[in-house]
Image 1 (cartoon, rainbow, N blue to C red):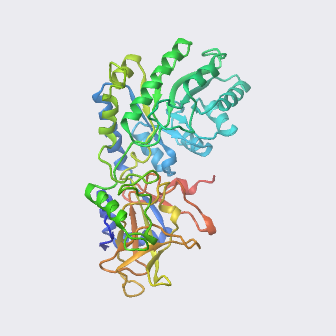
Image 2 (cartoon, rainbow, N blue to C red):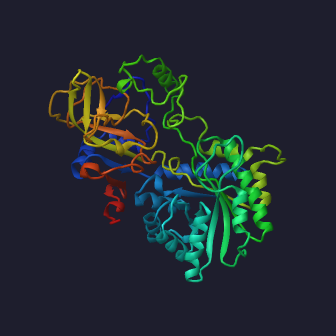
Image 3 (tube, rainbow, N blue to C red):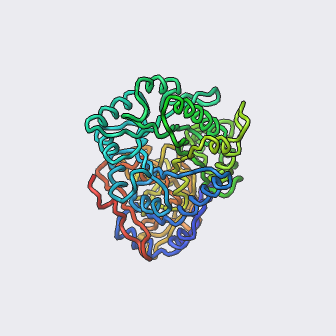
Length: 468
């Protein structure tokens, strides 16, 4: 049965009804682990429809042409592609295998964009042969793509990845400045060998004003492209659409305040009093904001309502006047509520100096993104017959890699009802980036199995049957 488990400074997870139902069924949780190993990634994609609708409703309120492209890199399951297609989304792909899988799954080529940071010749060949638009990052990619397209006399559809130029926006490794792109295209006859379908940009962070600046600059580039004879039809503002894992803003604030006051060497909150990047009692770059107030629809609404500096109309009005479609590429925020990771407790013990530990059959790459830590409290599921008496009341979670710092999460956790080998720990809401983006099979340990809710039962997702 589901039991209490929480960080010493709590960060209570927001759970979907299907998660509650599964975690209250200890026999079914045990069955999934016994059948598929630990950890196991469990997906139920109903919430994607809700998340898509929220974004579309915000766009519709501003009467703009709008399309969502699901960022496939956020989750490798085939079920995620299928659900995105069912919701009439496009797909943003970042590799040759992702592109192949989307085409094989029946995603129309005109609903796919290739945004890979580094593009192989094989990726370009398949994209061009299939009629898929490629987001070009640099001038070398432009020439490589034209060379591939020229081999068969095929027309090349591209988006130009723009490095937004504004004093409030940090420098980026992605794309080129507008002047560089316009110079690179100056000697290329519009429409003959290359079709500039749109302008694409990528920004770090979640500031809606920065997105408004990016869209405005992209519209300016489109004006110049049209003057040069090109016919772009969209601006793609990339991903980074915010979501919130936690409902309680006070818990998020209190956690960082407590961490700031933690004396050196005090492990009551974190392993070896790790500050997790805190500064002045608040998280800094490198820590995902697991609680946010402005998310998805409200965030998009604020962007579209913005009247940028020196502009006379809102972003939405400018898009409409230019007859330009706005696109976005969410991953995490579309997958909000769509998955959890379930793992088995392997042992309980003490570190050599007496600090209590709970070991799980998983490694730290199986619930981790680029953030300093996964700042959401897991859920404990007691099994019917633990191997030994449940004794731990407070401990750190450690994993399978033979590394001293193999911490699954760097926070300390409380187990009011105790924990023992063969109990289960669930990491909530991991479908977006946390399952797959950095997963590793080091030590030749198997990657986690991926399950999908389908027709009233849990089935193995087709990605686990795919040979890459």
